Length: 511
Image (cartoon, rainbow, N blue to C red; front, top):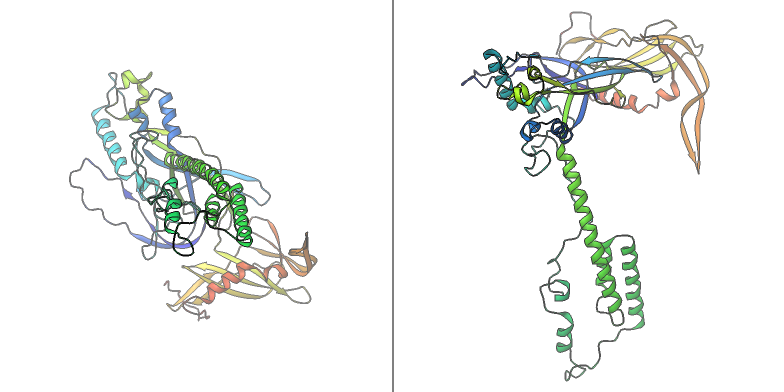
């Protein structure tokens, strides 16, 4: 969730009618610019599970595969600071395509649809095939036309014909790619190191004994090369490192360590035995990894990822969300044999199959348009100072307020100059000062000393305020002055294109 400036379409584009041979060019909807607090929901729907449910209810394979989503419905629920929750309320989610569908059509005694319902249902079905991706992934656009999508534009992934739910319509969804880590190339990468290792060159041992002559360049040596004690100790150490890496399942490192001791007299049998163990374990590891990767790919293929944007999310509050799908009923299609395929042919008159609500999401703290920080109080505790930050028209403004007394509202409507003319900036927070005092043991964080974790406490000036809903909130100077959010907002104000300056009163002009 977050705060941004967005262009919102006043009316979504209508569902195209595939029955019209040459549809007229769509007229772009008017755009309005407004500040938006938004919540983004990413949902996962198990296509394979739905397919299996359909099959268990005697759907044919073709019918079970025909999962066309007409709508994604969402609701939100207020989560209060004490952990209690409010009632569920409907979310009017952002849509780039508006699908209008009747709740039911008339099924006649012979199982057919009336002529009017026949044409309407065919048009709806054909339209869904064309625009389903816009239903699954509505993409609002911010100023400049950049895609407003926190997780990037989805990459088209077409389900394999041999995968679960064969023949299903292609579902487009993000599919992250992961490169294998720590894997070594197999076979052929070390060519020329002996036929016994699957290489491409001749055996190592025979060539050495033929080309290596004695001291005078005469007859071949009768014995292999000797090695001094220091070199042998180094080779034994490398062999131990290879064994250690093998025991820790670091097979690539183990094979690399063996290379430095290959051909050492007295160690050849140990090297050969360890190499055989490493190769066997490495092959088994690769098979396990390949199986896990296939399992993961199958899980990703069976899941359809769906997106929902709540563009009217209440600022500064915490909510949790849930969603459900509305799917086209395949038996409402005019070509379905309702008489022979349904116990009750009238069930084919239901256009929509409405799913169950998902489990609630974790609580989502929604960003706010305004924040205030307690920066100090008079020595007599009769007045408090606060800094207020307000997000308006795509930028942050700051107001420094001095001398707030008990009972005063925190923040007022003030004018500021943005370079494009004076604007009214609404600094009203909805909070009222209840008390001003000193807390002798304010909690300002934690301090780690050795193995002990201690709470850091220090005296601090205290501001007690009450919000518009009657909730009491204490604020401490020691905490607000060191707030990372304060520093971040202050930097954004300073980074604004035009510095703030008070202007004479007058009619504000919107940039």
